[in-house]
Amino acid sequence: MALMRSILLAASQNNWLRENAVNFPFVRRSVARFMPGESLDAAIEAARALEQKNIAAVFTNLGENVKDRAEASEVTRHYIEVLHRIHETGLNAEISVKLTQLGLDLSPDFCFENLDKIIALEQRAAIVWVDMEASPYVDATLDIYKRALAKYPNAGICLQAYLYRTQKDVEALLPLRPSIRLVKGAYKEPPEIAFPRKLDVDENYFTLAQAMMAGQAAGNCIRAAFGTHDVKLIRRLADHAARNGFPKNSFEVQMLYGIQREEQERLAREGYRSAVLVAYGTYWYPWFVRRLAERPANLWFMARNLFAS
Ligand SMILES: Cc1cc2nc3c(=O)[nH]c(=O)nc-3n(C[C@H](O)[C@H](O)[C@H](O)COP(=O)(O)OP(=O)(O)OC[C@H]3O[C@@H](n4cnc5c(N)ncnc54)[C@H](O)[C@@H]3O)c2cc1C
Image 1 (tube, helix red, strand yellow):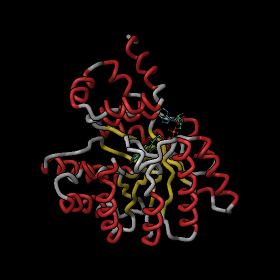
Image 2 (image 1 turned 135 degrees about the vertical axis):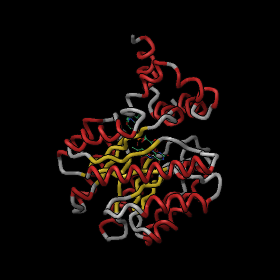
Image 3 (image 1 turned 180 degrees about the horizontal axis):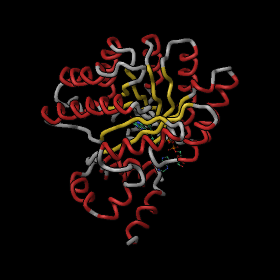
């Protein structure tokens, strides 16, 4: 399993595959399991269907490591349009952005200006989430996030439980009243900086989540959201919340579109906060291969698509 994960994560960064694999119909059929379509309209339609089930949406326009200022500015304009569309339609939706798509590789100040333009438009009590990317970006992402949070209390950040450092990052952030989405972590990281064993990642997740919930109850964490499909872990966290008297509607789970749908619906039905990250856009290859790496059994599903007519 670990070897397959490493191979797939290496494949997610392969330029030849990125340019060519996306043209194979069976690959395109496979990605459809994880995203409703490439257009914003398809994402909005999916969000409407989720809303019927009391599930909120978080939109993300796929893309990363933008190397050109004009492209990063275009992405910024796109997210501004997305916020306008959300406000016009009254959808229960938020957005999540990647800083390397907003120009982090070009200049942190330029990237911050782009993020600033986006968050400035979100006047509702809704969070603008910042994704966390591979470890070389963690410090720069946290710096930009802290600048944004000083200006906008509705800025949210994703933190990764597989990194040893995350415990200190949570401790440093809580006094600043952040919103945190905790995930296990999707990139290939060396054992010097990340727990190599899944069991340890899961346990660290539980420890960090408890700190976030306590922070939320004390008013130090505006939103504590758990980005995971791990049903056993979700139940363990929900039990912890109940034992401590934390209200159900402050317990939030975010999942990816198309994964664990029944669990998404169960959480919403039972009065928890359930949200789904709806990805769209044409630059889906590395994101899709990271989804395969999370569950190599997805390769069988892709193989079935190879033979489907
Ligand atoms: C809303 C959201 C936002 C995220 N944002 C980031 C981010 O900014 N940075 C980052 O590094 N990572 C991000 N991730 C990905 C995350 O780090 C994990 O890689 C991913 O969520 C898989 O871990 P898991 O917690 O679901 O647990 P796992 O233990 O990996 O999985 C638990 C169970 O969930 C199911 N499952 C998990 N993944 C899949 C899949 N791909 N296909 C089918 N079934 C699956 C399987 O049944 C599996 O047994 C995000 C995830 C979510 C849900």
